[in-house]
Length: 445
Image (cartoon, rainbow, N blue to C red; front, side, top):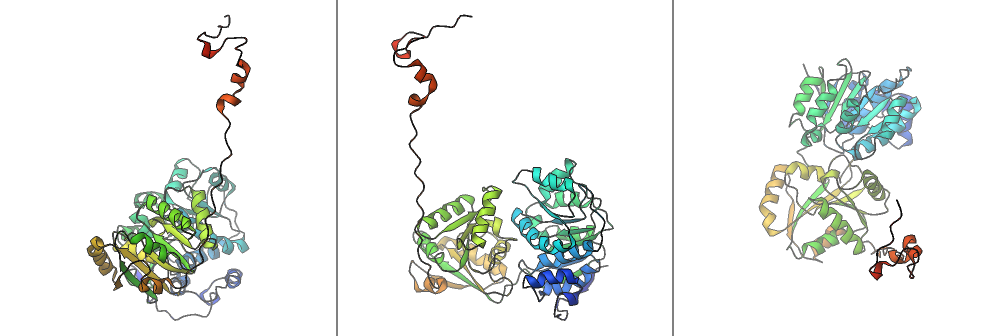
């Protein structure tokens, strides 16, 4: 039987009041994290006590810390050594970027207890991941595909896993990962603790809950179908001819912005065009290598560039502080994608603006999408330099001259530098000239 807890549980003054050990609470305090978010306040007493928990809340609600804390707290009290290739905690996430982000949250919390954390995902060579597993890692943060591969190769054995977390379970369902997730979970002892965090329970997520969670406590902090009260929504109608200029204006502000396109090619092209126009931008999409994705996301996080142009690969699980503006350059095809894209702004209590740029022929689909998303955006017909665009933009950033590409050094003629041609020389000595019509003498057998 599933117990349900009220998300409006009385607020507490600190993480320590929720049962977080002092050594971990000190780390949070040094990071400036003093007051827990509602999802943390609701779930931590149960998860720290070892209960199975189903946490429901939109992206950006603080779910990562809600499951990271019980992992490090519960593993940290056990001094036994982790065996090679047999981790004691597993966090399954849908994307590489989210795996890296979860690692960056968990690792500092795990350090006081000398717990090790390893990420496992595709797009990079597996050698480093295999070495970490061979050395014995306590906590594995993994994408299902690569983890499944390493399990088949015999590099991972999950029979020692005590705590299992499924993060963004609904997104894993959207990406078609549930058969692999079930195969992985079937190898983990049923006596362990299970924590599942998801914005919704559709597309088979409810099946995971019924099959793998035992008498879970359910905490619903908010509904993914509702809109943040401090998020403004606007729909700007433009002509096809004016659209590129309007998008450039929206991207030229002083604050961070994320621009979403439907295709990888469009993301790459828009980032390049903005940079050439004096608005430095980086792209994020599936065609980039993992190193390139990490590098571009780091440049955006560090403030080296203010504009990130992305496909839906960045719509879930990517957290960057102080994103003031999200622009749907290409309107998404369905309302869940709209909500997840828009969730890159107005996070953790901050405010934000969401703009959808549509052409006249897209009015019907955008109207249907926003209606299903439960929002009522402000509408305006705009052109370049429209007052409405300037109001949304705010202060304009100074134009940055693009760095010209390095001119490659002249390449010497292959004919001039080839050692074999130099040996033959113009006189044809020792074998005759190619251009004379005679063939070089054959070497005797």
